[in-house]
Length: 490
Length: 98
Image: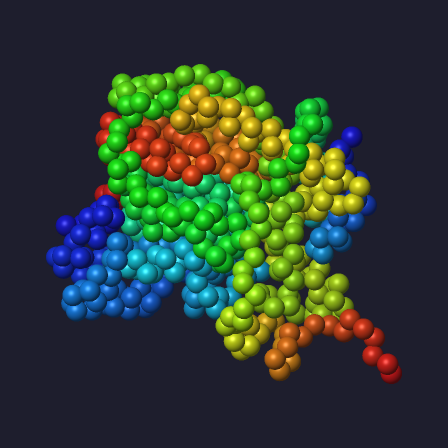
């Protein structure tokens, strides 16, 4: 039996009933990484020794008759923005190359406690800034459906590794679409929880009012299982919502009947690929066949989401990334210490890549004295209008549907020299973060050229259960999403 | 109107504590100007609302003022680019008296 495309629940069942050892499961995935990842570039660090040691511990626990937890023996790889004790963490940046964190992020602690085996750290756009993973300071990552194309970003390594069967599931982060857009481009499920639902303790900060951790997985049930493990209150995150993690097994089978799904008129944009539009319309028609009501709605401030996001997020980033100063951790270039100011400037000039510099500069511009009201404050006011649009829409509908990404995966290099073209890749995902809402991307077919397309659903605050319910209903009606042919054959 | 001058780019880079090479200054001048042009659309939006500072309205929570274990010193300073004993070492900030 090949293990690399097994559902998470099935791996847990096999390990718990001792039909397979955790070591066998983990070793099979490590072997697949060794065989395929040179072509994909998903892993920045593979913790082979640590993973096998942990797998043996799981097997020993089972031999003693104790239960290692709901993710017993499941090989999981993490976006390299999540801090892991004794395992290098870079956030895709040269400025953190070689840093070994002294602690685990809360989500990492929770995965470990649930019996998951962490096999390595995944490639990403530097500090999660990007939509293609080409901004990784180390090497680009490729889409397993077409190696000449990007996997999306910034959690591109997570989406590609899950799609290629290099890990059973992954965690990413989503500040403006960084879980959902790569999930869409790689044909996997990506869930961005409600802001505050999942702890940000130990998550390297990009934009603190927008960042959220969530799962990428090959099925809605797998994503729901990971979400149940990582969600819930954490006193170490001051913005953590004091609510228990939801139980989602009921939602997985509740079906679409009785749900009302809104389709925003404003999202009918000329830049949307016709194949994407057709696939999303077909997905909604399928949900309608299974009892959902589809209706047109209006989100009048949609067009303002992009400029609003690209003021709010860079402003927060310029503040958050001030900590990379060459004093306490990370790299300080040789000969930079002629004065404190020079040390800062040289450390940051050498350590940050072009996109990170661009966004810090943009944020510094928007926050500087005399410009704050015209740019940052104005963007925060428009943000309030965007959130109000959703509040009004949710009085009439349970979910808001759209394409996740206006296009399927684009070619490496295609948008690399045009920042605005790259920013437009997130045009449908940004407002979900601005409003703090939960969102999911689910596969909804392939283009004629064989590239995945994603359907995005956005829900009410803390109502991940309805997202999971509709996503699972669509998945059951449409059948399981396909695997990339080249990888499936390997 | 949003076009940035070269001097403005250098001023922002200084505020951001980022050294830029000459070619980076040239490129960023064009790129930032073009990005800021897209931001101008927001000026026309009627915004007589309170700014939204966070995704979810919530009061800042304080933890109890109790002593808790903190990072051991060796772990805290062990990966600093430059250290002296238990301290992070940086270039002189205050001139010595000699």
